Length: 114
Length: 118
Image (cartoon, helix red, strand yellow):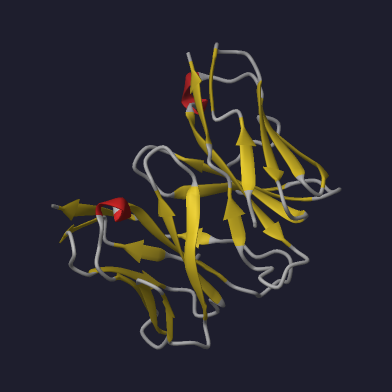
């Protein structure tokens, strides 16, 4: 089945950039997402990228997609303490219309060092 | 826009009782809703997919008689954990997809319900 891998932990100094990486195996992935989960809360959709794109920027967030290597990254510029959370990447494939499922990565816990 | 609510946000119950969790899409019609379970420090596990007006599709290993799902309207899905036991204690998260929206692929998540079975 599909597999999505992430590093479990990342520590970054406040003000630096954070780069969270994700690899996936499903070559038919259509949409790739980044979600943020704060302690005890649900998931907040941060951004997504369609598989025919290689970059998407949204304010402090930059998503890079290398479809050949099946590698997705999320860069957070000027990381702040409020960015501390677990970040999940997820992918879905539009193989069967109306029956797509999200496959989540293991999540990366981002810790901000003051 | 695209807000999904869950109720209750947390619940404690005795072993053997049933617990119902509601998931509502507040500002869109959710043709499809998903129920996930998240164990501590782990990723989300999809339990079932429910489409309005039809039976839910359960993932392998999920007991449909244990976890009853009802998607009676385009804005409400419920998950009932029947005869709950301590091993059912978990964080349950629902998501909803706006089938009529431009970003129909995107799932919007509820805030989650923490269930503790004593």
